[in-house]
Length: 431
Ligand code: URA
Image 1 (cartoon, rainbow, N blue to C red):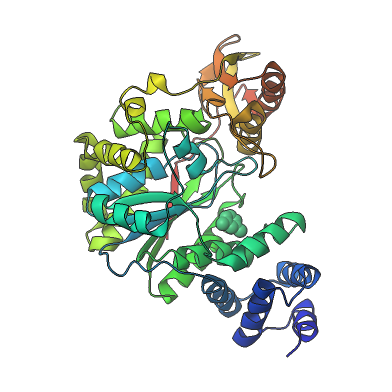
Image 2 (cartoon, protein in one colour):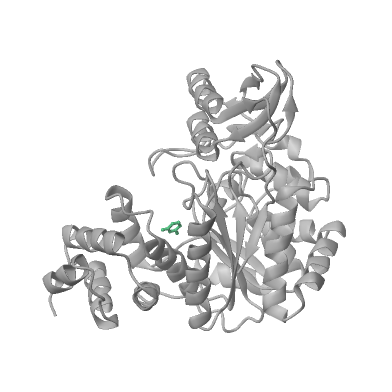
């Protein structure tokens, strides 16, 4: 077996074997296969595609390319994962709500890059919160609190680190089998028995159409179930930002408001759906009953208490949650107003995310610092009727020039029209 033979086989659209895929992943990780060969492999997979069997082989080879987390000492372990969106703070609601109902949530999350935010950055916006936990502290917290949320540490799925970095610079990110194997390899390595996937669809998602999102959801659930994990995917609308707050401390504020029972709507609905699926798959309860269990955990304050317990267990100052006015909002504020009467017809979600990034809420390069208080608060959502001069959004930044740039991008994202758009549900399908 040679790398050259495997590359030419895939280039010509032939099926490659489990053994050949393992050989490629091993070589990519130990450095014996050069980056230019790995890049050629990715491009061949991107163009020719991988069938189901090849995708499963790639996922397994990646999942076991490094360390894995053994959660077998815990019961009812449940994880959730979002394919990435704008204003997506569901982890802060669904994870503690599920933990408050008996699930064990030992969760690894990522940082934001580009137009989408990352849970770990958002969590660090609560002063004192540590997201780098060594193995013993991570497991001790899971045991004591039933929940821990940390950045990926150690040598977990090195194949994905290597391949994702290459995909990012070789225009090979947007491929169904490569996305499915990237996400599911990390979920399998992270060890939970139940995996609930939130597959976003629309202008702010990797997958822009419902059909592509459904195909991705079906592939990922198949991989998870074949690996012996209880896996379910929810397809949710990402044609506009989720909720009204975008940015790190701003998103914590909104999540806390939902947990305190003060905010309902799309963010509440999708968070309840994800948490209910975690409970339903973990305990075998009916989905409808699981929804009621989660709603009770929120209305009784137990989900909020669990979130505060999580933050406190990782060093965070929970007085910032009890009184979210203490959380940072950056001082330079621009108010965006409607330039005409009409309906908010669309809000290009990727552009809104890019605007938040420009304001300081995200990174353009890995080494950039985040301005925790930067971001956007939406006063109007898609479908709302507005009059000329009505406030559509508040933009927060720490620098005037960033605020001006962010405002330009935000302005180009919003379309006002004479006709009202068709209203889309937040939950489009469950697979
Ligand atoms: N998220 C991932 O972890 N991997 C992808 O390829 C896309 C989104």
